[in-house]
Figure 1 (tube, rainbow, N blue to C red):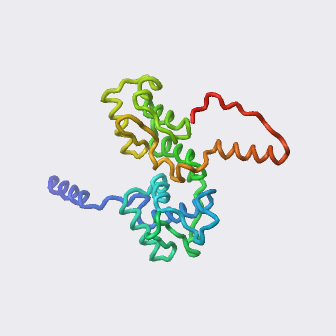
Figure 2: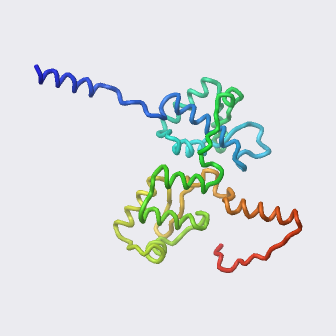
Figure 3: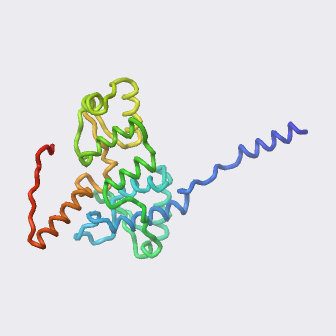
Length: 236
């Protein structure tokens, strides 16, 4: 009797459907709506020439992963839900594919204050420390790639041996493979750099330092000030 009851209970547990994730269903749809609304406030995302309140689909996908929306089907189902509710319009024929938020969508959305969307650096910080929580040599490697704004390539051998003091062995190769699968880096036989996915606002989007430098320059120009800048040692 006990064996039968235990087996019955086990069978019931096995037949239960897995719990819905936080990003499933309506939660994912609302998160995506909130992301679009937040991105519309980021300088450079929406240009003055744009007639619609829209953002690139790839950009929404990248920020969605940091907010717990995982999987192509989850994202696609959320878009379908939002389209049926007439909260978004997806312009698939444009290059790149764009997602437009409607007036109805705007009234239903709430900005995400911790989206880390103001600069690529903010996004990278969230991916590295919050989403994947990198540590050790993996973290050291990524931080080196970030030093120049992440926009330039490094020699794999120079980075590994000279900068990080590591050996180009299986441990090194496994580390690179892991980071590539996470879409953090890209590399070929000789070079390595941060992946395009680490620049959701575009590689040409101003870094925080560049934005602050321009603000300082404009401030000095406004008050008739000038400064001398030493550019020695900067590699372009």
